Image 1: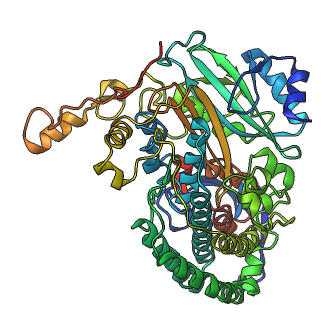
Image 2: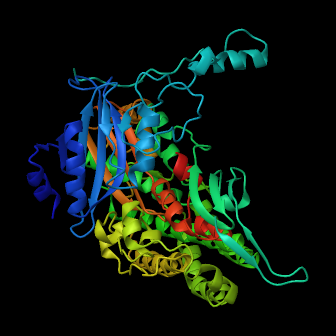
Image 3: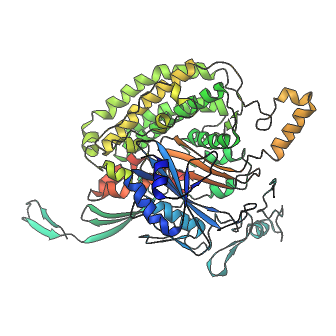
Length: 186
Length: 404
């Protein structure tokens, strides 16, 4: 069964992705049924990832998208299931359908703080345990800004370097974080 | 727990019960191919549970790439999978080119294919050297490294570096191939089949190799698909999925090559699929070299590619485009793209979300090693602890690729 036929079976609307593959928008509650249906039709899961729309120019709607990258071997078709949600909402885990989603969902949890209900082992995957926060959120500081660790400890690279050379401020004073060269259309 | 019987000795026959034991392997361990930590529950010598702990090499490439222009992303992409860096470069530039609708000239596509396939051979040679080293055989390592060294010399001719190439550009290449590259590659193609025979003589019929790999670490087709295994490891389990054939990119549809696969799904199959793949890659390189014709190597669109150096002295317009591209970069339209490609480890693709700015809004790398590593537990379960090392080697994870 091709991706388009599956979308019709799901009874959801197709998202317009001009250069991409077909995608289906789902509620978190619809996801388990959709995943089961996709698995029955021979789709395997390739990836699970999040997108944080916090600073996307002109974005209205929920803050996060969790996207499931599915691939069908026989028809060579690809389908994205997209679940929109706000901070604090949970998504049902699809590890029961595809065991391979285990690490992929843990990565999304680690990077975005999105919780997957029913996940057998929802721990951080890549970042150290004591890191406070979720690095791929758009409000997470980048680079040479102090990074907050648990219990109020800060890692401040500028102060660290200033200490090394015996000055109280860093050499460059660069704070990072600004998106240089962005031309917003809105 | 299991009852173990010890063969009769001077003290007579003995029977004892095993105790469950949890041991830690790594993160610094020669057989883990990087910084991989495994917590293993053992019953005697048999593995009952295995859980990989990763993230020791997490570098935050995705976050960094969100704060660099599209062109600068090439610097980061090849640092993930340092053994098959050209594949990461190719996957990244293909995604951005799809976003921009760039037209890559034929010569640039052929050169990309040549370098990616040579790099695939280099990666598989590393796999063989270290994989068989894990089994306790030191000799093949020196043989495979000898050929890998020649390949790295070829890459050094092209980009000046042996790893972390960064030679591909969005819309083409950084510069054309040096003159010496083609004769040097032809010389390599001429001598490599004889070297493959040498390797085969070293291990393919070796009794120790066969008994350590045949029937060990079997991953069935269902398990492989359930755990999203891709690449040669999936093909060893009987699923001939290769994106170079299934979803051709960069002109792979023009080349005549086979996709080797096996059905047994054991360590032996995973070794042999990669071994045959080297011959097929060599075929692709040969065909691409034959069809390599002189021509432009960059998209003529001035909004994507830098103007030629000579024009900067005569044309004000060229200077303006050069300045804009170098300081700010281009602004792809708002969209989301994904281009699946085949690296030496499996499906590799960059999912890029553009917000119309000069930097990607979100870059998500679908790395093959992370998903492949999940298949380690089903492969190792109810097997011997000593075979775990072979299973890690045969799945060929690169920890830079796993941790990003």
